[in-house]
Every structure is written in structure tokens, then in C-alpha cells.
Length: 448
Image (cartoon, rainbow, N blue to C red; front, side, top):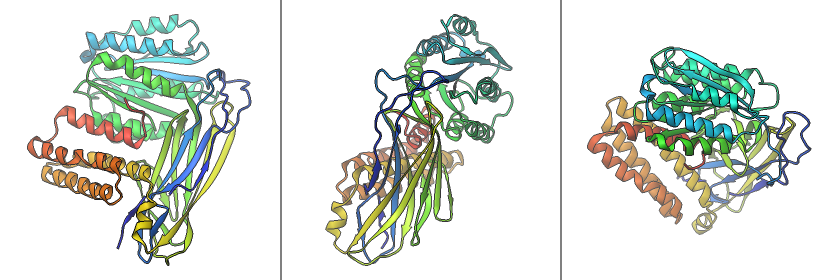
């Protein structure tokens, strides 16, 4: 009988951290990232083929208060189409100005505005006293169409002037409309995001109101390893920009590669939630950046051959390679996971790792949200309802089998969501919320 297994086994703890505020002459630092590999249970049922969830997590260390940080190369890309007129463009300008005030004088800022066309109002320059940047932002006025692709491309081009100079590169895109000029499909925006992340550039997307295309925005963020936000009220823009800058200003590692190797008898089946690739008995996950005081993780579903009771075996070996954000120093760490087998159900149940189970449940719900959107778009509402109920029921059983209240709390809303979809489908706000929350879960984005 197959069961779902989600073990705390090996970790690399982080020690002190000192990050540089300038691209040159950083102070020496110690490792800034902790590596951990876990499975759902330390003990698995013997004598049966098992399905397990392996979790590999990274945690950036909290920098000391007096520490200098890695420098930032930021492009603000702002939609100034006609739909942004009035309060929206005013709030957007205020939020952008507040973001600039949080930067240091040696950080770099570019400002791009787009409507039918695209205009780089300010090429990359040091913040200094902020006067030139303030002037560029305050001059943004709303009119025209929405060349979203062109705006992001121009923002990325502004960043490329300093791509090799040791900065953390980020585009923040704000839009309230449908792309109607230039490339306009999720595939085109996703391809752009994938290209940018290979250059070390992440794109954070902020969708404002109920008229923007959430498929474009979430695909762009996901493929570039950026954050995404759905903001119904423009009054929340200042808070959202502040949260995003908090992440950007706390980056401790860049160009992160996680490689998980599985021995004979353990087969990786798929990645749950996060994107990556599986080649033979190896799984690869790439992250553009890792923030201080935050966990990022990947979940890999694996099949494990049957084993005799009272035996143990290695189940996975994880290696992480990354570039330290302060001095571009290459760093690597590794950790291994072992598991035991037992014929006693009580031993299996008592060994459960509740946090890994909860993370798995949250990502299954996120995947289901995305599936539901696709099914409803295709006119298959009944299948969407069935899918919500099936996943909710499966997770409810997992929570009850292991007395895991966190899993039960994740599973509980699925039934009411199914009833709501059955009664009326998804509203525009619901659809945007589904897409945004799914991406936020996959990316382990800080809660809004």
C-alpha cells in the first residue's frame, strides 16, 4: 500500500554575517545560508512501496544590525496608461518615492514608464540625495495603452549596464491593465522572465485593481523568481512597495543552485509547487536570490522501494551552491537524509514531521488553485469543483491520520471553495487571488 511520507536529519547552521553596502572592498564574512534536508517521517512503513516528500530548505541568516548590506540595482517600471489616471497614478508615484527613500546613496535606480510606448525617464544612476529620481517619478502622467512587455524589457536593459558590478538586480513592475501593445501572452512574458533570471534579474509584479492580466503577471514573476502582489486598493501600494524593498535590501545569497541526488531504490517523481527539473535520479532547483531571516525550500515527491523492518538507509543527499551577496564568493554545502523502516504503525505515526506535512499541503492547495483556474477557463467547472473536493479530502485524511492541525487548517477551506465555485465560478477578484496566492506559496513569499 502506498502512503504519503513527508524527517529532520541534517542541517548546516549559519553563523555571523557581515554584508557590504558597496560593490567594492566588502568586509570578510562567514557562511550566510543554512541548509536542511527533511522528509515527512523519520520512520516509514516496511514491506511496501512508499511515496515520500523530501524537503530541502535554505535559510538566510539575520544580518547584525550594524552590518553593511549588498548594494541594489533597482528598476522601477510604472504603467502610465490611461486607466492609471487620478488616484492610481498619484499613489503609484508616492509608493515609488517612498521606495527610493529606503535606499542608500550608493544604490542604483532606473525609472521606466510605459503606455503605448516605453520611455526610460532615468537611466541607472546612484541615488545620491534622490533629487533627480524624485523629479523623474513626479513627472509621470497617465495616458495611452499598455506596452507591458516593452516596459519590463526597458527596465531590464537599464539594469544590464551594471550587471557584472556586484549588485542585486530587481525590476519592480506596477500595472493595472491588460497588455495591448507588443507581446501579450503569458508564454511571451514567461520566456522573458526565464531569460532575465539567467542574467541574475528577478521581476516582482504588482497588479493593481481588477482589470490587469494576472496570468501575465504571475507567469513573469514565477519564471524570474520574483514576488507577486494583487492590490485591490491603490492606498495599499506604499505598504507593498515597502515590503518588497525589505526583501531586496536583505539579500544574502545570489545564483543559488540546489541539487538533490537520490540513491538506487529511490526515484524522484516530480517537484511539488516550485519549478525545477529532474534528470535521472537528480533534481535541480535554481533560485535567483535568498533573503536574510527567510526560508526558501523545494519539495520533491519520490518513490521508495520496499524495505525490511528494523533497517535504515540513506534516502537523499542535497548540495547547495551559491554566490555570497557581499563579495561574490562561491560557497557550497551538503546534507544527507536517513530513514528507518518499521512494521509498527505507532512508530511511523509518532515520527511524523508536521511542518513538512503542512508545507506539502499548502503547495498542493496552491497547485489546485492553478488547476481550477485552467479548468474554469476551459468551461469545465464541474471538474474544477471535483478537483477541489478531492484534494481537500485527501489532505484532510493526511491531517487526521497524523493528528496534524496545521494540515487540517490548510485543507478546511477547500470544501467552501468548491461550493463557491460550484455556485458561481470565479469572479475577477477570486481569479486574481487564486493566481497570486498560488505563486506566493510556491515562492515562499513573506505574508502580505
